[in-house]
Length: 85
Image 1 (tube, one colour):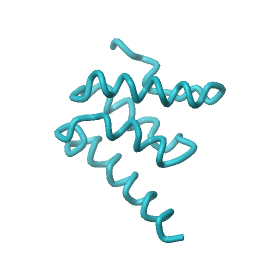
Image 2 (cartoon, rainbow, N blue to C red):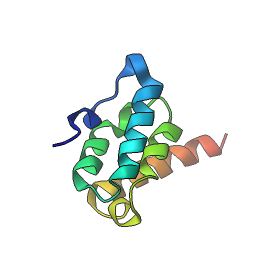
Image 3 (cartoon, rainbow, N blue to C red):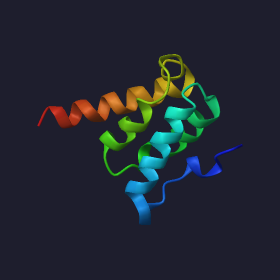
Image 4 (tube, rainbow, N blue to C red):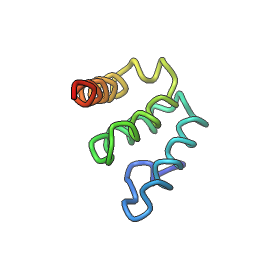
């Protein structure tokens, strides 16, 4: 459990928190632990684009399995809702 803080967003330092998570996901794109922690906070982001920035740093394999599939569906659903306006 190298990055326990990955599972929560620091709303007081939101942009920094998103940037840190994006960087960590980029460093460990195949981490199932990080994907699980990301799943816990996927609905907490201020915008779906912020969640997508982090999600896109995970490997295709990680995005297409288990929690990754659920998060991908969530992002796609909310992105398409905004695209229609």
